[in-house]
Length: 297
Image (cartoon, rainbow, N blue to C red; front, side, top):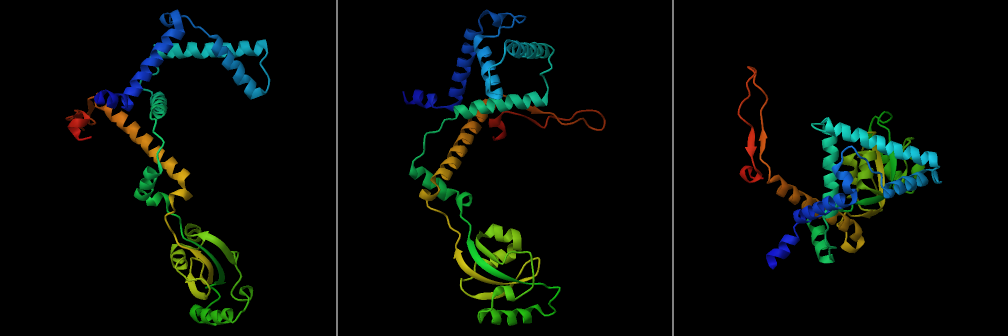
């Protein structure tokens, strides 16, 4: 019994069962037409779907002429599709191969049902993947710009200006004009790095709030800065980001199930990779001729 339960839980079994179900459903619903390649049946359900799609698009039902045109377009598509398949135009076509792969992957996505995880599972996942959920350091700060093209002695000028700022001078009255903001509110480290560069951001997020200091250097020049508020980077608690953690966990589990199913399908094939022909026009030995278990996959 345990082996039977384990077998029923296998994603590949789900895939095969649903595939068989779809095959039976197709044969039941298609009826005798399935045995007649020169007969096309447009079912009432398909006509209703055409009407509904037209109504959703144009906000009104189609006229008789419009509906007849929709049906004729469907018939034209079906005839061309059947003739193309009969001529083998679907073979060795990378676009069609990709579309078929995507369709199968979507089917496997639907089959890869994962039980809703509990807090213990999500907490463990959060701890195992901290880089995905780490909250960046943030800082609020003011900055006074020192233009290097106007400063022959940047350090001396910065010392003089720092003294003025610490005595209460307005930041707008100190430094050089710039299009950069004078004040930033709880900017993330990556936002700061995007505007001032990584070295500047790395130094800024370590400064204690409350005191003017500098100069810190960016690609534009020097900056006197005063951090007014700062939050350290941290890994949040599960309760703060539960929905995000659950989405990431479920996405990873579905991908794992899809990969497992692929490996089971892959095991049924022998793959041979032939090398390109040599300069003499002769092909060499096969690069690979194996099944996954033989190649260590």
